[in-house]
Length: 493
Image (cartoon, rainbow, N blue to C red):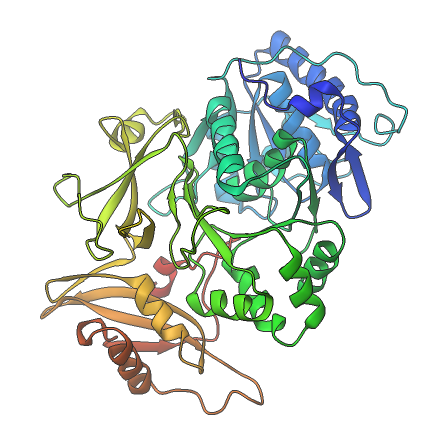
């Protein structure tokens, strides 16, 4: 069995978690999480608990609660504290948690408030002189670790059952790709109900024996402060890096802080090339991207020790197999950077099942390969470049397969464009026509906003005439989810 957190079991005095001015060493974390794990385990043995909900606020308590559940071998269901009533009711009914963990004083909504509750108490057990007791035996590798609910774009959210095996494999593969060590201090402000912020951003440092500084709320000033101190790595989503890109050219403190970081990682959506260029120009540092999903955890990444691969999500991680297939499910051998196919993945990083959905689980696989629904091309160096989701970002227009991402990057290269999204719409002549949704730059130095014709011509000059938007809509803002992804279905709605 794989020991998930060696530094925790060894009682390391090294820093582990810091949220604001509250912190725990690995030894203190063991002293806090161990007794909580025992209480969870006792509930499991006497009441048959196999799943517990965790009110996943961006706090030290959430991190402790998840670690305790993992030590106890009981699957944790992290719940977004900004969740809507209907979605919460579905998640509670579907996962049937027997218990909810929350920070003391947290006001829980109805479906969670009706459950037996354990408050995550930290103060007493976190004293410097606290002596950790023996931790529970390590659960088996296939034991469910987390059940993370997907966004549910085609129906109610599905509960993705992630075993300990998948968590350990992904974090160890990233250790290799990112040269991640116990000396690294990770800085981020990501939510803790998602793979990015919770598994990579909290469990990753704990597995390495290193530490995480969670900012609570993202700001460029907070990033500069932490990276100017002892931070060595930064995790963020494109929305965060866009704000860093806007400020870094005029903020020498921020530029120096980003420049001294060992690793800048962007994920959860594609980072526009314009933001890559701005950050690199101001700091000398490149931002690397990786590709993963809730069901697969991490699949590919640009390597920290590899050549520049800006604009791609890099190469497959150790132990992960990735292929492209055509519409008939045949493997695509071409590595020409042009041939588009759907990404399929297999390896020990994959989930076990969709909870209570054997039909959906079966439909998600092609033999042993998981159908991601993401479309990509592969270049001669083996790097993958995502062109979009099969359902929303692959546009079939005039006999061409066109990825929305490259048109979005072309639009963002126009000085008058602040944000851009591209979709397809039915067209009697072309099959689908390209539709652009644009937020223009504002401010005293931005000049007059571009016209629709100007933007369409701009794209046609940069790419090819058949990639020219036929319709351009101007918006005040693009609809986004908590991770900064554009909600394209809402654009057409």
